[in-house]
Length: 223
Image (tube, rainbow, N blue to C red):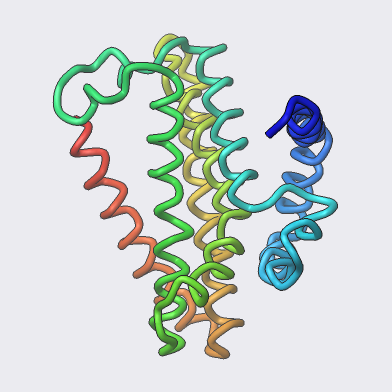
């Protein structure tokens, strides 16, 4: 790569990053208002060439990553450094800075779209491959981002031990995040599998339990 090619690559990278300031709030707002439409959009865009995918929003994995970055920034601003960074026991010893903590949280919250996508393939009796899994995983990254953001802000609010109002509000946000995410998954399974909402609720509940068990297992490794 010569110098001019390097400058061109740097120019493209800078433009891509700076446009996140515009397209992140657009993506967040559209996901909050029309989560199912965004999930369908995420799936449909994978049929385009990489250069033409997601022209007016962020790609799902990038959206999830930036959402966790935003949640982490809010935590640093309001309550300071996470105790996990200072912890040196178990796998927590591998998390020595904010970057590794952010990557760890990305792994944790990527569990939700991954298990939801695998569950859908299982109930559809489709073969599990990289190609069959990717559209479902991408679709699930959009609501997972909103879920992670509300859950993160709620968790930060509960850390204000001297202010009961913040703690109650944080608990309410946490419960609301699970309720919103659970209802969305219920409708998603019911629509995709062409089953009743009651059966969709059962499948969504079972899959949420699977997600939380994996999440708890990962958390236990860091304890």
